[in-house]
Image (cartoon, rainbow, N blue to C red; front, top):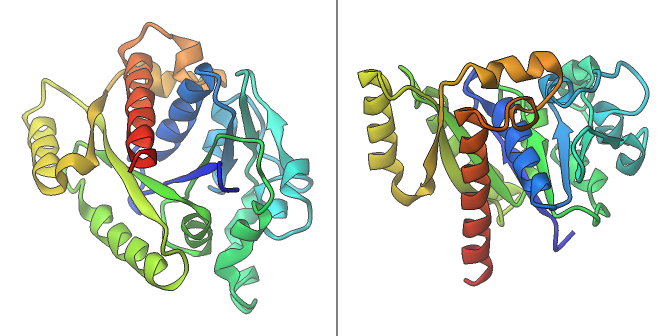
Length: 260
């Protein structure tokens, strides 16, 4: 998988825009004719629904791919977006922590499942808002992490814990794992709190924070109810355009990393 870049979109705090970032960043890259796969590893299955598919209970999904019941290639479904595919979620993922607890090296199940997945430029893993075996599997399988941070009170609450988790994963399981960047989400330019949080995050994390800020925009939360990424729902909206700019930044960082 040397040419495939695998990104975990993760934050231990819920409601910060993980799924929205996963779906819309993946869509923006697919629009640039990159071959992109979303792996929905959140039992809620919101990424699956956001690209117009149904959560799958039983059959071929991220749970059965993770546990080796089906090959991951057999679990991939096409979406409305050319170049964008998805491995849908299942509520069966809720039982993974218990089911795999006594299995040897349970952190490596996803990495093994993705071992020969070579026909994608980018894989985006939508992680659940908790540090259990699902998130650990995602981080062990990934080359990079993107951390969405909501521009609201206690925004950094989950980030400190996630950074500790990433450090443990690097030390014990995946030394190549790096933080690609932090993306500020739900930014409200009229709110002093939003501005203050954004300033604090940028002051602390410096260049790790993407320049692009994802604004509060009604089109972003509306889009999933129509089974579409916001770029398909309303391409001209400020929300859609912010993800276009973020995709450009991600590619720019990719080129910088490639060139050393």
